[in-house]
Length: 122
Image (cartoon, rainbow, N blue to C red; front, side, top):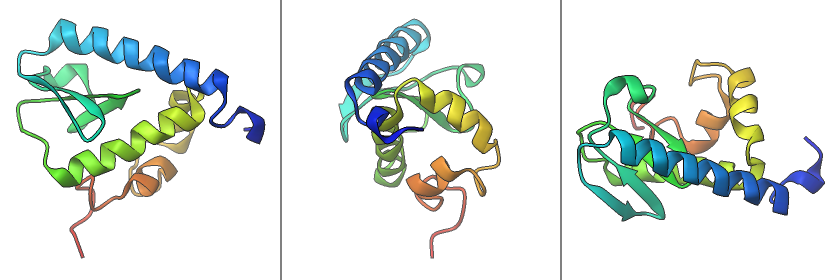
């Protein structure tokens, strides 16, 4: 990706669009508490089919199930938020090409495999 597109007005617009989509999806399906923590909007009580694995970060929104996310998970998801800011709407495409295996996906590795509970903490 050309460096002039990173953290650019275009990527910021993509981040804001993704956050709006995350808000709409979370408001539609969340049955739990909605709160703001660690710079993220957290939508709990999402049905499992509305997100992958233990949750998903869309812009500045973390969509997850019934379990309250701990500080480790929020740290992991905060890195994904920064990735959204950096890449904008290119992030979903780049993430797709990085693969579903979190142990080889560069975005999950950057966010911290231990904090994302993909690996035991050392």
